Image 1 (cartoon, rainbow over the protein chains, first blue to last red):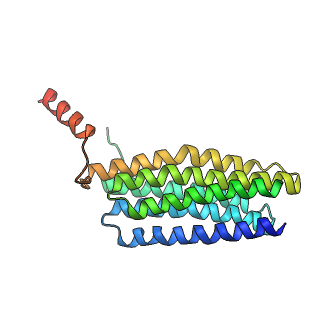
Image 2 (cartoon, each protein chain N blue to C red):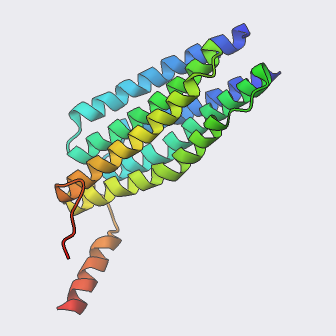
Image 3 (cartoon, chains in turn orange, brown):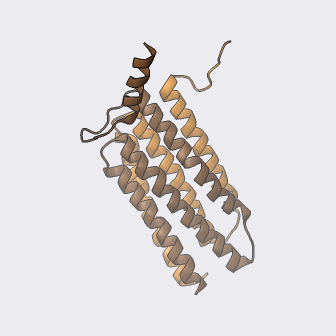
Length: 96
Length: 117
């Protein structure tokens, strides 16, 4: 780990934290519920990026599982929120 | 040299993530915010995961398939989730921006209703 890579990863973590604050404002204030869903989905993607940068900064490959796990959970959560907002139910039973 | 390449790719990814968050913060309605969020967040996180992939190749001589799998997963699922939220917002009647000039889905719905009834 050179000092260049350490400095750049620190800068990237700070910038991504600031952008997550912007998204948090949109998730709290957002005029409608789909706005909040968009902001929470993007916060999940930012968490994946932060885990990737931490894997570089700490020189450990154990964060790679975390990246996949956050991605899958964010996608399933977003799909569930979208179906709930559209129909009022998440798992719909189709009779006949 | 390797560190310079990894740093440049990581800075590009961070720039795209920041611009996507700025778009979600500033744009006027749900549909334009989705446009900003899904595209630039996909590109940004792909850049950062490629940087981590190159770092593990150069530093530990280890090819990490999980990072490539994460990039492919994000590339497949971000448009799907964006489309689902956009469709839910349109069906629930979230208003468009007042300067929007085209609404093709509304036109198609009216055409379908007129042919059916």
